[in-house]
Length: 302
Image (cartoon, rainbow, N blue to C red; front, side, top):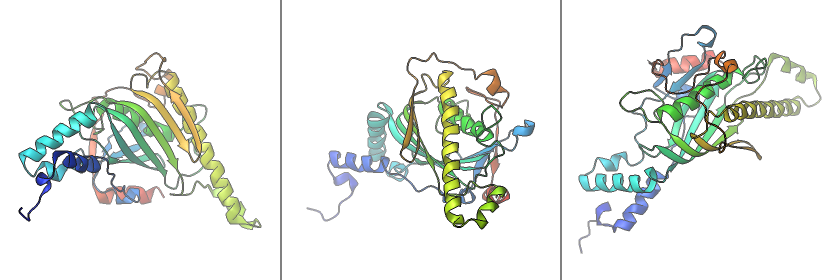
């Protein structure tokens, strides 16, 4: 027997296990918005809403864990494509999306994505908050949705109507159906503090008071997000798009089911006034932003 072995010398069922391990692996997201590198942002020119940007990764950024093997030879390429189609694309893959939030700006990054998937069995979204200041209507507006939810809604709209690439492309535009979407609100990436928190300095245990106030603010943010999600689900915007949506913070979980709710393609008139758009929007354009501009935008918002 020859002493030289390669992936192709292994039995097919073993190679399939290798493909499974690769496609089920996750990458590490950027540590902060300032470390995301090249991004594309929406060129929004609507006055008061112009400071709300989503910095999307370029369509070519995600090559997938099997991209190197796809370029080795025809047999491997054929096997991997066939395995991906039969195992994931027909049944729906499990994917992960990291979303960093700073003020009214978002930086989404895929950490696990099945190539060319049209439906997802489960999408895990980790929402990391960076230095989100209290007040200012960012999460809890004056009767309407908070300003931050506008960009979250925009990201969701692009995901389900434009597909995992987010950016509209006439030739490659692909809607997406998700069986279960889990949104995890993650704390510890920045403080939810306002200028009035200086009053804790003369307390007996100011650090404990600050932590207590932070926890209260995060719980309030969680309730605000749940309230907005409940309205989106109730209006039927997610019907036939997302079957089950879970919003989590720590051990607290809210579950929303869209079955039985009449589908709708139009947000309420009240939400339209806040800049909400639902559906494929060919008018939305994007502009390239280099890594230095990303860092400047991040530190300017501090």
